[in-house]
Length: 379
Image (cartoon, rainbow, N blue to C red; front, side):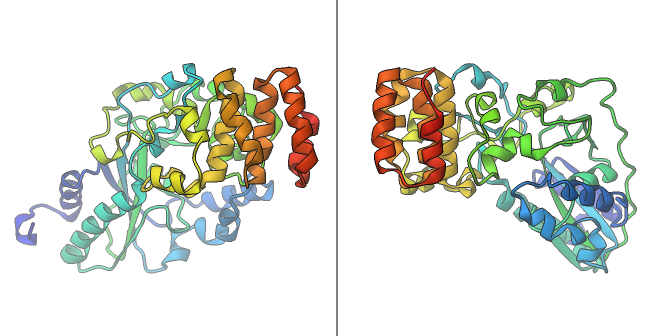
C-alpha cells in the first residue's frame, strides 16, 4: 500500500496498518514512562529470584530504561497479538496420559511471526515520519510488560502478566522504538479488584504476594528455563505439565471477553496439541528436533522436555508407561536418568523397582542420579 493511500495522522495510520497486519493492539508510550522499573528489577535480582535466567542479571542495567538501549528514541510503540485459545487450556490436566503444553507454545514460534509484522509497521513510520526505527520482539533488554501497561494495552495483573479488557491474559508483545515524537496514549487502570483467582490456583505457591512472582517456584520457569533437576517439592504439583503452565492465565475472569486468536499460525499443531506422554518419552534428539521444529518447545531441548515428561509419567499412575520409563534409566543424559529413577519408583512394583535400582547402581557413575536411586523407594 503506497503512502498516498493513507489518510489521517501517524497514529491513526499505525493502527489501521497494524490491524491489516493481524496485530490486535498498537499504542504508544514514552521511553521514560517506567521510572520505577529499574529499582524493581534490581531488587528482584538481588534476592536471586531470576534463578537460571542469567541474561536478566547481565542486562539489568540496560533493561530498566529503554533510553540506555537507544538514547535517541523518543517514542515506544507497543504492539500486541492475541494467542487466545479456542478451548479451555486446563482441561488437559484431567488426562494424565497426555502432556500439557502451554498454549503459547502449541503453534508456530511467535518471535519471527510477530517481528515480521512489526518490521512492516516500522517501515510505515520511517516513510511517513522520516524517522529512524528499531524493532524488538523479546530480543533486547526491554521490559515489555511495564511498557505495554504504560501505553494502555492493558495492566499487569496480580499474576504479573499483562491483562487486557479485550484480550484477557493472552497477548504476545513486541516493541518499535523510533526517533519520531508520537503523542503517548494514557495507561490502563488496574481492573483486578479483589479477585485473587490467579494467586490461589498456582500449584506451587509461586506468588508470595499479589503482583509478585518467584520464578524459582513457577512451573513455567521450572519446565522451560531451569537447566537442572526439578526440586522434589515441585514434582507432584507439576502433574502432567510438561512445557509451561497456564493455570494463572486461564482462570482470569477477563478472558471471557477474549475471542480465539485470529492468526491461524498460532493455533495448536498436531505435534504440540497436548500429545500422549508415551510419544514424548520415545523421542531421541533427532526425533525431538523434527517434531518441534518451528515451535518454542525446540529451544528448551530434548533432555529437559523428556525430564519433564518423566515427571508427568511418574505422576500419572499409568503402569502402561513403565516400560518407556525404564528404558530411559539408561539414557545418555544424567538429567533424564535421574527423573527416570524417580518415575520408576512411583510406577513399578516394589520388587521390580528394587531390581531396577540394583542394576542401575551397579553401572551408574553420576552422583545426582545415584542419589535419586538411593532416595527413591516404591510407595
